[in-house]
Structures are given as C-alpha cells and as structure tokens.
Length: 255
Image 1 (cartoon, rainbow, N blue to C red):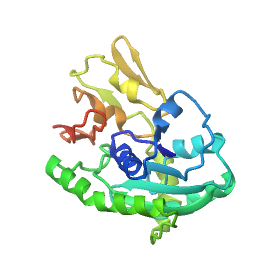
Image 2: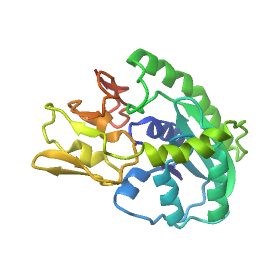
Image 3: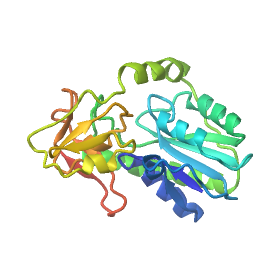
Image 4: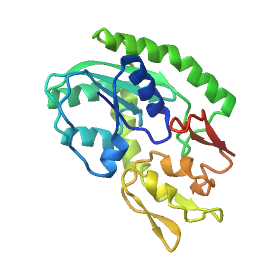
C-alpha cells in the first residue's frame, strides 16, 4: 500500500510511478486528513509513505496523522521524500515514528523534484522543471526495484542541524496563514478551500479567508486557477507550480 501526501503534485507523481512499477494501489493522505478519516484496512504489502520534505522532515500533519492511525505492526515501511535539495536527517524522525508504531523501518529515499515553496524560494521555469522530473525517473525506478526485492534502502543522510534545529524554528516563526491574501483577480471560485488539506480556508462574501491551521503546503497559492493568491511580497512575479497527474498534463504554470 502506498500512502502519499501531495499539495502541488510532486509526491503524487512519484507515488503513481511507484504504484505502476509495483502494481500497488495509492491512498491520498490529503483526502484522509481533510475528512479526519483515521481508518485503514489491514494490508500485507510493504507500507510505502511518499511525502514532501518540509524543513528537512516529513510534514508535521502527516506525522500526526500516522500517529493517530492504526497500522499493522512490524510491517516493512519505506519512506520516499520529495525535495528541492535534500531531506537532511529526516530519517532520524521517521525512525522514531516507526519505533512508536512498531513498524519495521526499511530506509528513506530522497527524490529531487521541482521546487514548489513559493513563499520562500524561486520556482524553476517550465523547461528546467521538466529536466528535473526527467532526471528523477531513474531514481524512482531504482527505488521501486529495491522495494520490490524487499531490500533496505541504503542512502547516506547528513545535515542534523537542518532537521533538528531549523525545522522547529520554521514551524514556530514561519508556518502560519497571516501572509496570504487575494488580489483583484479572485473570482471566489473556492478552489483554494477545496484543495486545503486542513480545511483552513473558508469563503466569506465570495472571498477566501484563512484561519489559524495552515501547514504552508502551498496548495492554495499554486493551484489557484487565476493566480489570485499572494503570500506577503515573497510570491509576487513568481511562477506557480502544479504537476497535474490526474489530467495527464505535465505542468500547469502561470506567471
């Protein structure tokens, strides 16, 4: 079974590719988290968890979801983290999760995908994003083969300061919804509310309003059809990134 969390498509893309190689099925944690559904049927296949890297760990909301969700004990569990650069020592924290849930940790693989954190970083242009995705494909296939053989994923992990110190600072001082706002391009279509995994966005008088449970997944800003959402001054004049696997389009971009 493959569990994935994906706000702008990177991790979903990887999950779908892994599922193809292994003839396995995927389950969206976005939908489970949004509906507060903590039930999973028992399964015999290895558990594969594919999520983005948030400040060099798995997203807090994914960690919290897995802690609350009953999982089969001692099942082999693989972690695949999509990232813009690296996942540092995220392995330390997923090992703790596995120990707590009595899962058999089988390693963590980092897959470099196009940057999507519009609130802080520049987004690659479409050509560059395509190159990054193409370069990731052999890594994805190799990882699937390792999982298929039931082997441990061997990957060297470094950067303890990023995961141990920067991550909690990131969540304390940066992760909140105060910086999001809409421009005159907003039509009140409610797409942002639909894709928010924490139900943090509500439409009031035809305008999105953000509450206080944001995880900075960037789904709202990157998936707005009208590029009508900004984050402080950081997102102005930047591209938006969404890898649309459902409609078989490679990338959805807007300037």
